[in-house]
Amino acid sequence: MLVGYYVMGQQARPVGERTPAERQALALEQGSRIHPQYPVEFEHAFSVAWHRVAWSYGSWATFSAEARKDVYPLLIKPQGRLYLAGDHVTYWNAWMQGAFQSARQVATAIHTRVGQERPHRGAAVRPLRSLSLS
Ligand SMILES: Cc1cc2nc3c(=O)[nH]c(=O)nc-3n(C[C@H](O)[C@H](O)[C@H](O)COP(=O)(O)OP(=O)(O)OC[C@H]3O[C@@H](n4cnc5c(N)ncnc54)[C@H](O)[C@@H]3O)c2cc1C
Image 1: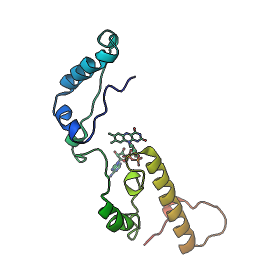
Image 2: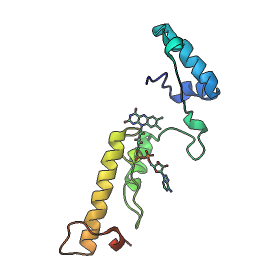
Image 3: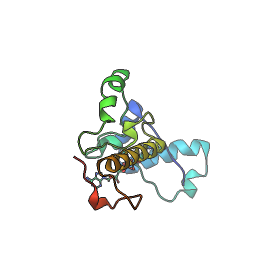
Image 4: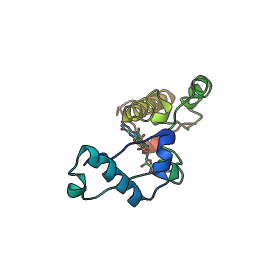
């Protein structure tokens, strides 16, 4: 498998506006300048224009310096039982590393909270149905 192209920002728009078949043709045309065997060896292609995906309308979130200061601290705090987790609530936006880091932090925070709210002897991990966050 080979990544045919990976465009972002405003450069991605004209590519994303094309049909999948047109994007495939573009990738083959551009790629064959480097790998002349491209058109012969090619089998299948798949592409996603993230700004056209319903409920997404974009690829990933980044923060302006201002939002990082004002909004980010609020997003990483739980509100009642609601915890946000994902690369979008880390300094590793758009990276799996951020997703893992956030998942671990949130799971740890919930685990700690449950332990404090309902001290419990015995099993180290409580069954999910006994979670009682308010
Ligand atoms: C275009 C693009 C390129 C990327 N390139 C890279 C890269 O090169 N390297 C890298 O490290 N990272 C990359 N990333 C980032 C990486 O994909 C994310 O960091 C990672 O997928 C986040 O993992 P996650 O499990 O937190 O969330 P997701 O992978 O988004 O998983 C969340 C899941 O929850 C499901 N879901 C949502 N709502 C509900 C609901 N109500 N009920 C049930 N299920 C629900 C969704 O369908 C989805 O399957 C890229 C992301 C994009 C968009």
